[in-house]
Length: 78
Image (cartoon, rainbow, N blue to C red):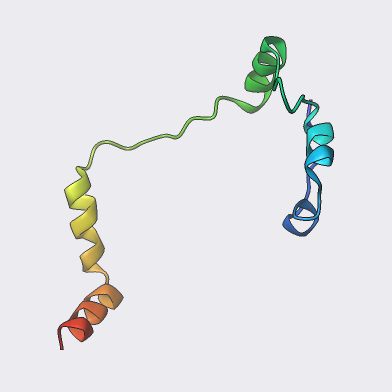
């Protein structure tokens, strides 16, 4: 199981081979079924919670309530 955590500064300096070693996987084959199930039990599934209660057009128009957006729109029209 993966227990190594890297901050962003350290993570950007790690080579691909080191990442493969840290993640305990194979670059060509990936994870085996047993390892997938083990990691999903530990970390959970890679899913997003999507709130579908509000239509997308309402979310889009809702952005125009922000004062800064209104100021930028007014400036663009002038």
